[in-house]
Amino acid sequence: MPHANRKKSKIFVKRAYENATPEDGYRVLVDRLWPRGLSKTTLELDQWERDLAPSTELRTWFGHDPTRWDVFQQRYRSELASEEMQERMRHLLAEANGRTITLVYGAKDEEHNQAIVLQGVLSGLIGG
Image (cartoon, rainbow, N blue to C red; front, side, top):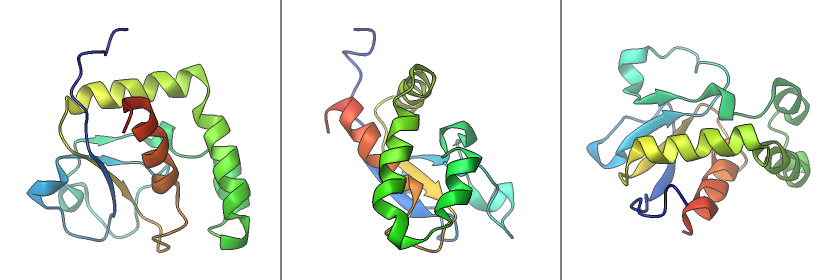
């Protein structure tokens, strides 16, 4: 296994509209669209992984409607299960190199967003 010796990263989620802190570690924007009203300097990102975000079709269908949350999670996890997405996630973990990872997202809803789903999937990859 190529990443067997990799240190385990802690993975957190944070709204793009919250200030960056040193505790955030490796900051990754996981939205397909850039958050409105924010500059690249303001976000203080290490990476923008727009391709790890839900597909445009899934994002549009979900529309941040909490009544669609359960189905959204299932569909997004299915998207993340593809070999291409698995490779992207392994690359993200390798780039973080054991540092804390903060998945940055722009949605207003802090309980129903793609970063929470991605956090769970990434944690599963590192056995966390």
